[in-house]
Length: 132
Ligand SMILES: *[C@@H]1O[C@H](CO)[C@@H](O)[C@H](O)[C@H]1NC(C)=O
Ligand SMILES: *[C@@H]1O[C@H](CO)[C@@H](O)[C@H](O)[C@H]1NC(C)=O
Image (cartoon, rainbow, N blue to C red; front, side, top):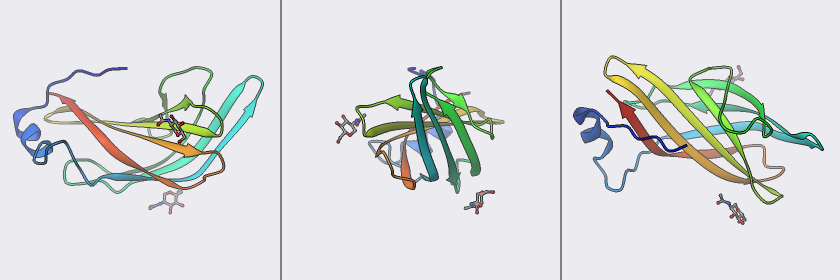
């Protein structure tokens, strides 16, 4: 899904302080597990984001499968996850954080390519978008 939104000028100035867009936000994944059957693969993991000056923190659990396809909401509905089909033994893990402030709605996204059996890893946030 390609999101096309315009950042409010004030936030754009903040987010584009470094070019190309670079933030230090990193989400920590733990207890990552994928179980596959002929019917598809199911995943579960915990994800923690400490938050930054511009983004709220969170700590939640995600559960879903690669059958439905696309993002599936985690327990904290502002977080959603998508397990991308990669060539075994690799998993593409995509996470999106969506939140609303008085200035608009914002999205942060990160993707990580992990090897099957990896239970803890960090997802660097590489994309921020918003709409006023
Ligand atoms: C996140 O939540 C889990 C489960 O409630 C807890 O065990 C863990 O300590 C929390 N992590 C942080 C960094 O707060
Ligand atoms: C994930 O890593 C594997 C092995 O390095 C590579 O073949 C694959 O293209 C990577 N996928 C992504 C989305 O980076």
